[in-house]
Structure formats: C-alpha cells, structure tokens
Figure 1: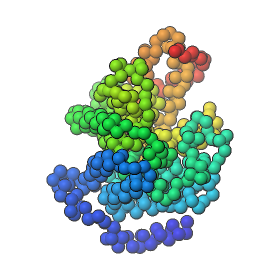
Figure 2 (figure 1 turned 180 degrees about the vertical axis):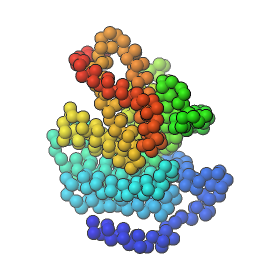
Figure 3 (figure 1 turned 90 degrees about the vertical axis):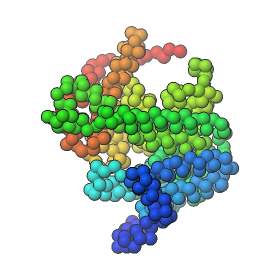
Figure 4 (figure 1 turned 45 degrees about the vertical axis):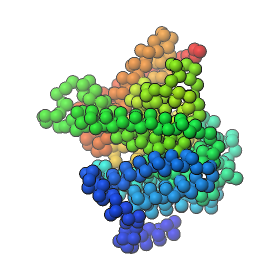
Length: 508
C-alpha cells in the first residue's frame, strides 16, 4: 500500500510531464487517425477504437495459422499492447499497471488470499476511474480506457480465483459452478509470458469478451483441433448478423428514438396522452433497438475471435436439425453452427436475437455479455451461495449489486440491477410453481407466449435507467406508467406463495 500511494503521488505531481511523454506514443494520431477523423466526421477516439477492432481481423487470421506455443503468445502480447497504446495512449499505464500488479499478487501472496486480494485491489482501481467519469463526464458516451479496464478486471479476478481454487480440495468447490473445470493447479500457474498473452489477447482486450485462462491456453498450445475452412464461414455469418444489427441501429432506430420516452407532458413527442400499454410497448421497442449499439461491437469482435480459431467450441449434434444445413437463421440463433455441426461460440459476447426473443430472464442473462455473466456466476454468485445457502435470495441481490458496481456509480445502474434481482426471483417462483400447471394441461406453448410478453415488457421497462442513467428521469418514466410492471411483479410473487409446488416429469 505504501509503494502504491507513493507511485500515485509521483504520477499526480508529474502529470503534465507524463502526458507529454506518453501522449500518442506510436505517433499514429498525427500520422493517421486525425486525418481519418476529419474525413469521416467521427471523434478521434472512435476512429482509434474502430481501427483496432478491424485490425484484429487480419492479425487474428494469421495467428490461427501460427504454430502453437510461444510464437502465438508473443504474437498476442505484441499486438495486444500495440492496440492498447494506439487506442488509449497515456491511459494505457492504468491497464498495464493493473495487469502487472495482479500477476505480482498471484506469484507472491499466499494462494488462499490471491483471489480476494486481486478482487479488492482491482475493484478499487476500477472504481477510481468510474468516480472520475461520474463527476467529470456524467452522461457522456466516451470511448476511454475504462471500457478495457472493466474487461481486464473480470479477467484478472477470474484467473486469480482459478489459482486460489487450484489449491483447494475438490470437496470445497461448488459442484454446480465451473470452479473445478477452471481451477489452475499450483504446478500450472502461468509464467509471465502465458499470463500476459491471456490478458492482452488482442481481439478481446478492448471490448471483450472475457474468458477463462484454461480455455485460452489449450487453444494457444494447439490442443484444440480447429477446422480451417469452418472458421472463415462462421466469421462471415457473424459479420452478416452484424450487418443486420447495423440496419436496425442506423435505419430503424431513428424512427423510434429514445427521446420520446422521456419527453415531458405537453411536448409534441410526448407519450403521455397514449394509454399505458402503448407506452410500455414503445419502451420495449426502443430499448430493444438501443441494445443494438452494444451487440454491433460485440458481433464484430466475435468475428475476429472466430477468424483466429479461438471461438471454436466443438461439434453440435445435427441429427434433428432440418437437413443439417448451415443457414443465416441457424447462424443467428444457434451461435454460428455450420453444416458440419461445428460450434463457434466459445469466445462470444452474446446473441442479440436470443436476448430479444427470450421467454424468461435467464434466457436474457445467458445471452447478454456472456463472459461477464460467467464471471458473476462463478466468482460472485456461487461463492455467495456457499455463504448464505442455496435457498437464500441474498446471493441473487448481491450479485446484481456487484454487477451494478462493476458498471459504475450512475444511479441508473443500481435501479436496473436491483429491479432485475427482484424480477429474477419472481421469475424463478413462476417457473417453479406456475409452469407445471401449463405442462400438465399440455399448454407449454401458451406458457412460452405469456412469459415472452412478460419478459419483453419487464426487462425493457427496467432497462430505462440503464439507458438514461439518471434516477430522476427513470422515476418519472416509471411513474408515468404507474410502476405497473413492478406492481404486477410483486402481486404475482405473493400469489405464487399460495400455489403448491408440483413436480414435472420430463418427457423424452
């Protein structure tokens, strides 16, 4: 702690000199990015970001043909650091420093203390960046180093707890989690080259997805037999899906703008004069279209991962698939399953179409920012379950609060995730007690239709604060619809308390 404070004090005292030395360290702003920014009419930070995203395509494609081992490691580190410097310049010191500090803790601290120590220090570092953003850049959509730092925080915490779990007996690990699969035994703790290769893997370093060390190291060492032709086909399908999302974002969304949701009563664009169901429907559609900006970046990144070969996830049984053929439909909804049954979702940020067509909240969370959700489940939720017990609702609430904390300090995040935890608890109760009634009545389709409508309205209703971030704006929008989804959610939960739990036999 003393050395950390000393370094931070020195950085503060020499801030101007550091920026002079580190600003545009590669010289690309003056030589390339500024000209592209002026020509395209984009902010220079956006040009840097897009350049690094698309540069990952040829770099990843070449990496897939390199021999497994240290050649791939050095390739990953070199281009990852270059992307970091090009995109974040002097702020790269935050990312490189956090990565090195976490590795130092892994090698020096007692193994049982590695996980919690890295979690605390990485959260403190990330929180400092979020606080700066909250007080000095409130509501601004900037592409800065905090985006990469959030992914870095997930990765260092994941690998740190994998090291801690590696020294624990199997009986102490949660059997429902991936802790046994992901743990790193003491003899397998990565050396500096392997660790930095994992951290700076260039297609995912800036915008994710996060992934486990064990899955990455197997691929880098050449232990995964990746189909050569299949990765090009899967990457094309993923890119075509990204084009569909671009169409929704740039062509459709302007006709259904977010601004109408918060337009005050009496303004021409106000929704106040419309019935509450119409307002909820508008909120549903516009929030669905808002999410396209996240999935657009994620799909572009996923395609570069697939090109490198890292996205390969084995084969899927196509026995029951119609003709066993590849199609745009299957690519979008089955995570890039090609005609040979090869799956390409091992390194994926999520599936936009599965999120928007989900029939329950689990379907949403399982396909939204999946790397982060795996971290929340295995590093946060299952460890809290071991403390509070599996039947307690505390792990659900605390996991959602952790997710809000990871996103930052905007009040909207906490309104969203706390409401999400309530909706999740209610959804579990409904699935446990109400679904068996529909199954026994041979009406599973009717149940799916009802839950699809409830999920769509509920998730996008609580998505308002995630988009607008301001708690005052959120409460006004919710008040305009009389907090109806919240009220119905609570009433349904109370009603399910009086419904006996029934078992449903699984049919073949």
